[in-house]
Image (cartoon, rainbow, N blue to C red):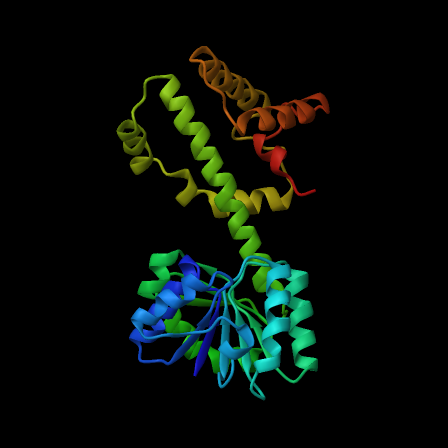
Length: 282
């Protein structure tokens, strides 16, 4: 018997996929309507979270944050079967994942943090990436079932909180990348460039796919003395971005903050360094 706590968009589709695989699933959600809607697909829903986990050998979670995970698990714990396995797919802090791993072990239960890079459709189709770290024997025993939930399980080794940290890094990249795209769309619109024309450019020239690993290594090494693009020149172009958008009555979101950072480094005498100096490790 499986219990699934947190049946929002992602959790609900994980449940549907489990039901398709013939698993018995008991479900709970803070908003009961979301869990009871899954009874149509064969799940058994509960209003009381402690009742939802009774008889379950594995309890999956997809909740909001550290506080909600701690709160729900504290209430659900009264219904846990001896030796029950807790698998948490919530995006949380690394410290929270470490603390829960230790705390639940002390109570006689196993807790495995397994955040994901998956949307609702991925959860339904069992495609995407799931991250794990911690007890390697435990992970080895869980991996066959976790692999059925996702296209790929990435194991980051024995440190309990590392998977949580890697998930945060990935999400930060997605957020900054997306806001950068928003500025690119704004600049395109201010210069009468269509989406189709932008796509034609990036189909041929795709820096996100081709240069990220090399750029990360260069930034990590900290040697910016052999520029391929000087910071002074990058700052000049950054001003051109902002001017073009302003002339069209539009505002960029991310670029002005980057320009300020560039100005700080230029004032410190780094104008002739490689422009990636603005991303040096702090």
